[in-house]
Amino acid sequence: MSAPDPGALPGRLRDMVAELAAIPDLEGKYDALIEMGEELPDLAPESRTEGRRVRGCQSVVHAYAEAGPGGTVALKGHADALIVNGLLALLVRGLDGLTPEGFLAVDPRFIEATGVLGALTPSRVNGFYNIHQRLKADVQALAGADRSAGPAA
Amino acid sequence: MPEPTIPGGLEAAASAKESPAAYDVERVRADFPILSRQVHGRPLIYLDNGATSQKPRSVIEAEASFYANSNANIHRGAHGLGSEATAAFERARGAVERFIGAHNGNEVAFTRNTTEAVNLLAESWGRAHLGPGDEIALSVSEHHANLVPWFQIAKERGARLVPLPLDQDGRIDLEAARRLVGPRCRVLAFTWVSNVLGAVNPVEELAALGRSVGALVFVDAAQAAPHFALRLKERGVDAAALSAHKMLGPTGVGVLWGRESLLEGLRPWQTGGSMIETVDFETVTWNRLPWRLEAGTPNIAGAVGFHAALDYLRALGWPAVEAHERALCARALAALRGVEGLRLRGPAAPEGRVAVFSFSLEGVDPFDAGALLDAQGIEVRVGNHCAQPLMAHLGAGDGLIRASAYLYNTASEIDALAEGLRRAVSKLRRPTPAAAKA
Image (cartoon, rainbow over all chains, first blue to last red; front, side, top):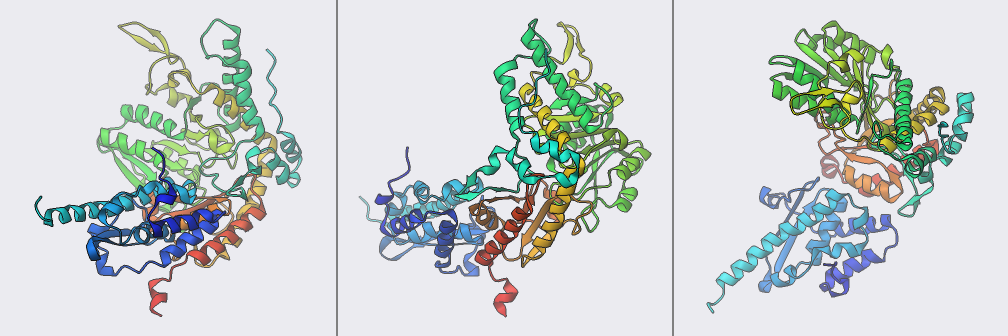
């Protein structure tokens, strides 16, 4: 299996990935990632629960999904480390507001198209996928709840 | 057969040997092909030498030349090529003996690395000599390689580990060690140079302490051997270990040195080919030292490459290398002091240390800093440096940034590190809670 076609990603994520991909140098990519993270709304201390902690990250990372308006998913998160926070922002901002099906249709290997993957330490690459897994678990639970609440076939 | 010549790469070394003042770092650098490459579009500034050193052309060519011209298995085979390969391997052993100041041909066993050497010693000596209530004294600053093998054998034999604390500069606290190393101490195992702090421990005083209670004295020389002459037989230690790859040699080659009387008493740890004399289904007799400690086919080409590395270091000469590294230390300590929020761990003065610098940056995630340095072509290590007890002792649970220099690094690279850190801090610093409230 190959990485997904960046052009087929949902709109906001596609723009974020394209922005990173267009930056020629690694330091510039990191600068952009840090800015993307800074644009995330901060996560209130009471939202940083143990249950929302992303395991397998070197820094402290929280991420979760909850039901948004009109059957969409609302994604939230925060990482203490700024570059990780930028990676988290790709997921949280890039995939926020999609339907659960829309979220689940996105292959997280889209990160390969940004050009930062090769420079990240293996633990940070894993950290990115762990954040995605953490969000995905919530989204799957929301999708399941949605189905069970729906009319009987 | 004629002695193979070491191909190329020794011109800088030859000039440096004449006088330390003649040390021409640019000529040295020209011997290291990798130093002219770029990473992420920037010139490589390699400051992760504590993890592994780069290799001069002579080492690369010696290893390749062995495969191209002399490759055969050793200590067997009734053919000329085998004899040639065996001679090259044993010449490498002789070069190691001379380089580390060992006694004779029976004291150096080749291993894969320092870790394997410590495992060999801990398993074979420990299993025969340790019992319930015995103590193994180790410093708080041990690399896991000189901790976990002792932990394992202590657990198995009912012995216990006694941690030796550090003084303010990060060296083993001799006064405390004198209180803690008592009559139940059977092993005193310590690192000569901390892989995190760069602090050089007082090896002779510690060896005397260990001997005074009849303990086996083992020194982990992995971070010492690249930087100064070991002169092992003068130090009063019983055994030592080192890795070729940290001192210009190939990966996959390490050394366990031990006094012959000690090695003679070691029960072989790994068994199989090469290490036996006779085998039938009733009895097995062991080969003589040091081969009985080298089961299976070793890294022959690696040993030949290591020989070339030792020749390179010997030709440069320790006075020249030490003078150059001392100058780098002084430069780095001054330059790092100029980085706002940088907190250095380990000795603050250039004496009694090697050019290994570990530090945190206030309000900055160390992995973020490592990534931004990497983007500038500056390669450092970030993390716990295989020394988790030390990290806990230092209160550095998030990890430290470590820059470790070697004989080919330059003053301008040290300056670039400091500038790179300032740049990283300016981009990465989060306000501390106190500053945010203000």
